[in-house]
Amino acid sequence: MTRKPELSFWQIWNMCFGFLGIQFGFALQNANVSRIFQTLGADVGDIPALWIAAPFSGLLVQPVIGYLSDRTWTRLGRRRPYFLIGAVLTTLALLCMPNSPVLWVAAGLLWIMDASINISMEPFRAFVGDQLPPRQRPLGYAMQSFFIGVGSVVASLLPWLLARLGVSNVAGAGSMPDTVKYAFYLGGAVLLVSVLWTVLSSREYPPEQLESFADNVVEATVTDASGAWRVGVVLLGAGALLLAAIGHFALEKELYLLAGGLLVFGALFTWLSVARGQGMLRQVMGDLYGMPGPMRRLAWVQFFSWFALFALWIYTTAAVTSVHYGTTDTHTAAYNEGANWVGVLFAAYNAFAAVAAIAIPGMVRRWGLRMSHLVNLWLGGAGLLSFLLIRDPHWLLLSMVGVGFAWASILSLPYALLSDNLPAAKMGVYMGIFNFFIVIPQLLAASVLGLLLRLFFHGQPIWALAMGGASLVIAGLCTLRVSEPAIELSTAPAGAGRH
Image (cartoon, rainbow, N blue to C red; front, side, top):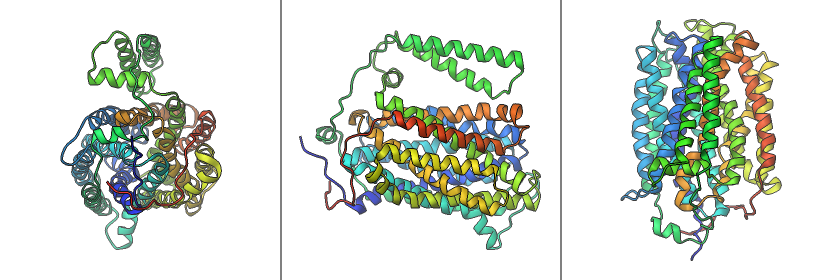
């Protein structure tokens, strides 16, 4: 067996460059979709339910794409066909979204857009695990975070920049300002070109060569799922109780999705305990039930991290425009100025994330993966909690420093902690399953945040950001349960290893 060759700086650059475009689309979605929904007539209380499409599509798409990409080999390779298909579909959705005539069309396009982004994004994570030896993986994931930061900065700033260039920032009832339309058009072009760059400038190891590397020390195992019915019974019971509570107490309709999800997964785990054969559903559910211990512990870190991020994405526009700009009327100049400033804030935290991506390898060398992630998560928690104290919207840029460090860390360090504990033959499907713990907290946030705000905070959206800050603090504490992998970290770009 041979060791996997190290790649040069520019080889790693090329294989990660496509993430610039993927995040361009993702950032435009995060910074502007709540604004689009409100402009098309959505009430603030309805926004979480409308956003449910995004995480739900990830729950369905990512493990399926991971499973399929593990078993794909074409002239374009193993992962790259999925980069390209996802990029084309996302570009089409970006071109259509700002022209949505009614709310339900925008909600449907969000579903299509997020599913398409997931088709590209999940194989990109597995791509780093495939191509890089263990000591270069933290560098690879940090470079992905760098491109994520750069792409998000420009994308989030686009409406604000276009307004400064004289493009109209207001529109009639039910119409998007030209600043939003042109930002989405430019985003589609950037996404497609950057993903094509990675597809055309990178190559992949054939499956048989990938399996031969000595770096693949983790063997794939067959899961004994005979006890999965116990998990199924618990989930079925929880789903039934939640359904009864929704009907009895007339709770928010979004909770029906959470109850339905519990019932579906309860049924699937119960079925898993008696299922035979090796079909896709059986293998994905079996790998979910039997996932490695380090992945189970990291799942809690991801759960609380992404609950916080989803609160940030869906409530920042409503929070800043209502508290810092004093309006909820989407047709006023003040509201649109505040919504553009949210784009600036999102650009700021992504700019700080790009800086953090450069700093994180040094933090890891000094403190290790686990403690570096804890520190960054707590910085993000402090940033979100500070929204309660700051009233001048310009000072919110300071809050974004912490959020940026947390964002860069969330996008890199959990994957570096995880990838060395996964078999190469199942890298894609396990990365897809790991993303369950990105999707599930987003579904939970979309289901319960509106209820929590109504019951405890008089419907004020700024408290959703505070709950997000507390969630990041808890995520940091959960990292203490994760063991530190014993790997030699790459301290500098490697030399001329090629394949």
